[in-house]
Image (tube, helix red, strand yellow):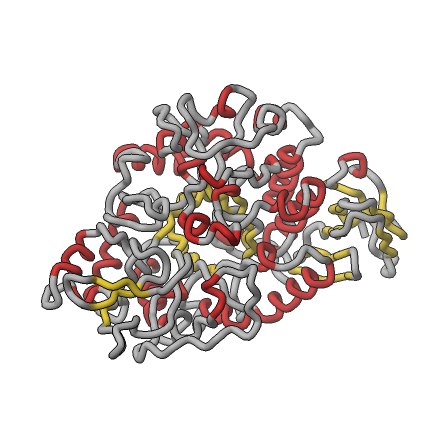
Length: 536
């Protein structure tokens, strides 16, 4: 059994809170969130009990993909503020005992980045090989069949230099050639710049895309493709992603990060669990946390969730630290996926599983996806594939702070519309309501941070069926906790077969449960979950 007082790193004991800067708080009335706005809301973030803030990209960018098309890796976009504003934010975060990590986007740059402008200027430019340029096939068609995640071919014809360049996302986001050592060093220089400033780490965007097949072989057809899926899914990206050589690059990145004290490296990786585990590296020498997106992607059904947790725990390498993600800027919000009441159960699950949890801003008040009319869609994924309804705008809408105009987010016109019910569903309203989603999150986070078993203890599955998941969190010489979750909308029943399992309900999705003594059969209503402090 795990020892209760062994030394854990801050990111092992902590909770990550993702902020999408455009949508958190606007300070200057232009309708777009910014860094000074985030600084004004730090007391709220701290009050949640989270320990780490992760900022989506804040770098200079033409904003073709809202910051994921970077034109300068060592500055801040004027849209969000200045480097001086960032320094203030970082100081304020650290003064509150929290950490700050940035979103690093090393796979591709903006087509307006000086590097690409030089690369595109002529075939013999010294930076030509900084990107992936290829001649077309004899008939003039693209070099291979690789697709863009945002629709269409992954190759763009450049008329002046008579070659194609590869872009795994928008044509305004050309992929860097990470096989070029000079490119590697240029990116490592950018990483050092922010680490020298005191940033506590990075979430690395699409890290499994960094290296492509050297022979540029065609990707195979996906036999499981269905018409409602994105066009990118027509092929299996066997040769355009997850290449063996990518691990050498990540090890170099980790070595650099490890020259600074206790910095964190997270990898965004959408891969099956067994492939995901390779990104921990041999003896943990790659990313500290390969993001685990199973709670984002799986059907919300008890058998599948219970199986996924068990398989993930079994697959973890020795000393591999687990992590769980319930929401982010690319996927529908949890309250929209499973319903508001079941989202309370999801919160209880996320904050009691073993490993580092990541929260997405607004989920703590149950924000739902907002219907954005087609003529207001801004997300390039939605604009490029409107018939498939793949816009990510609905989960990126402004934070709902209060019942004032524009929910207290801005004095101008917000860049995306807000939910119709923001006057009722907002931080101010929920802070005054002991039965709110926000109150539940705060109780769970507070208990997790106080109790060694919940913060760093072992995970022991107890029971699961078509509706329920039950498990114990425990650590040596500390209180144990039983968690029972009903992932369905109908009543469910669980009998404690081990008569030693008795205790008091400490936190529940339905507060009326709290204080109840549990000893034999537990009768849970639909959308209910309980956390029990075991007394025996």
